[in-house]
Amino acid sequence: MDNSVALITGANTGIGKEIARQLAAEGLTVYVGSRDAGRGRAAVEEIGGDARLLQLDVTDAASIAAAAREIAVLDILVNNAGISLEAKAPDQQDVDEFRRVYETNVFGVVAVTNAFLPALRRSAHPRIVNMSSSTGSLAVAAEQGSSAFAAYRSSKTALNMLTVLYANALAADGVLVNAVAPGLRRTGLNARAAEAGGDPAEGAAGAVRLALLPDDGPSGQFFSWDGTRVPW
Ligand code: NAP
Image 1 (spheres, helix red, strand yellow):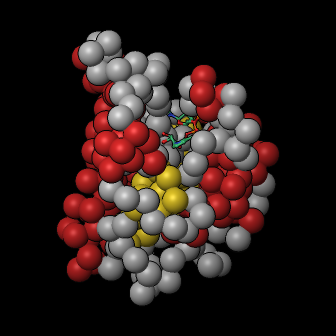
Image 2 (cartoon, rainbow, N blue to C red):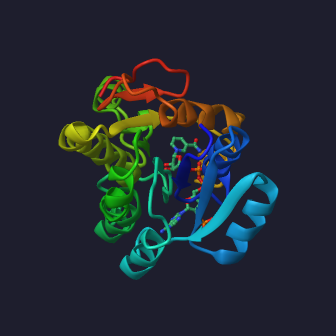
Image 3 (cartoon, helix red, strand yellow):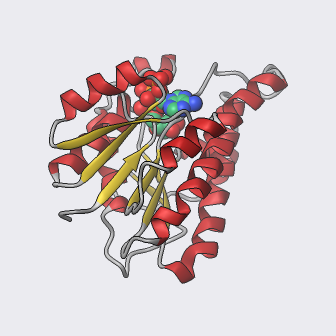
């Protein structure tokens, strides 16, 4: 994978930083997306290898446009940046909270993906990995009868549909597009994640596997971190 170039959004901490670390260890040039330059620089130093800071707020059109101008050819885009907010049921969650979460987890992914598509199309082996969640699975939610984290979970369901639609739209360009559920990991995403025992590096490995798929690899699929399929 020498000379390959990857961009991970929200890579200054959590699972994103671990994805960046693992891809840099594979010898890739890794753009560490971070909306805050200071936090991004600290992560770049920690990651080592050919890691580079790319200041990028996925909710800011000017920031996205400026970032896209920095990369001519992009082999791997990992749409990892995400927010969760509180564990509310839909009847308890204000519509503005839905808007905030969707702005990052859904609209941010569309804006970033579309901005970097010209650079991805210049790659010989383009890959897009969307960081989803098994909590966004319609099948799992219907089976569990659960209602918490309404904004977050429905945003991931929308992301799953976008994964399929992008995979279909970009198939002729050879872009493999997949979603991954990293499992519950100890990060700052929300109170539940903060208390979790799961190692973020293990969840990151699932995204790295999809980022490094061979040309005949799957597209438009939803995988767990361990490579098994997650029901839609
Ligand atoms: P995290 O530690 O909170 O990291 C989230 C990252 O996203 C941070 O770098 C954050 O930057 C960045 N971010 C948020 N809003 C942004 C924006 N507008 N522009 C650019 N970056 C932004 O959470 P995490 O657990 O690693 O989450 C990473 C992904 O995994 C998310 O998509 C999440 O939904 C998914 N996931 C996590 C778990 C889990 O158990 N942890 C489970 C399933 C799915 P700042 O540091 O500047 O806030």
